[in-house]
Length: 393
Image 1 (cartoon, one colour):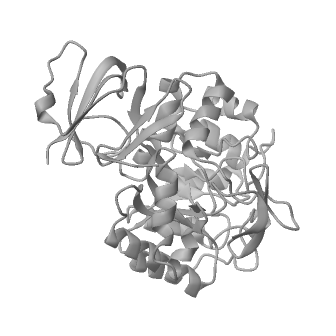
Image 2 (cartoon, helix red, strand yellow):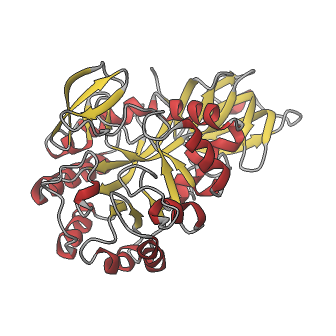
């Protein structure tokens, strides 16, 4: 098989926008990048596409996905097709790779969900779906007072034996773990997790600034959905929020759906926080891409979706989101007033770097996977390619 030429488009490279550029894809990887004056040969490709007027950007990397298109990551325990349905749904919205995020559950259920995700990864996602880069374990070692949409009845103190079991069942697929460092002996286990190549994230937590500082020293480098399910910023106790905004060791997740974080606060984060330390995520649940209604569940708890906003029935707590990465991009640009080039790293190279995948994901560079998204002038996804294979809508 030969390859694909996408030509005559604005190519968003790591350090500049190449106007009128062309990208040649072969064997699922980026083989060549040409400027408008460089020669190219259509004989080198099966397909040549003139994308004049469009923008070619790196595929989006989402490190926090619970579901989408009617499927939930936790369904993988029993349903071998669940992860594939999630992967396809998000690929249609520009996500080319993601972490499958679990919820707090019983030890047995959580272990079986991990097994199911690993099976899906080993089997591979059929052409037309985003690549699963691994697992994000969001719980069960959280602070029940900041449970958010997690089931407080199943949250438990940090148990290293259970953690080791999950790592073993994950067979290297556990890439990110969210925990509350102030609960149990979680703080003293951060170094052990980080030394195994796991990104440790602070979340669902009431940690004070001193505890966050100690967590950073132990190896924590991430904050799960900044502002949500954590103690708010206080002028005498900066807590997680204040510390995360000023400590460059921490990368912060933001959910730009307009519900989780006010647009002005999103603008504030982009103004204050180092840009290479911001990662946009969806925190999407099974209801993403589905109609409004009452028939949804998250972590075993009933969820209602109205006007695209998902909440737990009874408490009214936000229950993940119905967000997609293409909409997150549009809204981040609108909220901040920044350019596409300025916002784009938060959906691409920043999250890829956080999970150690930036050697092959997150930017348009020769040798990297041909995970590419073509955007229209209004930032609507026109085409998505995962390892050079087009995702058909």
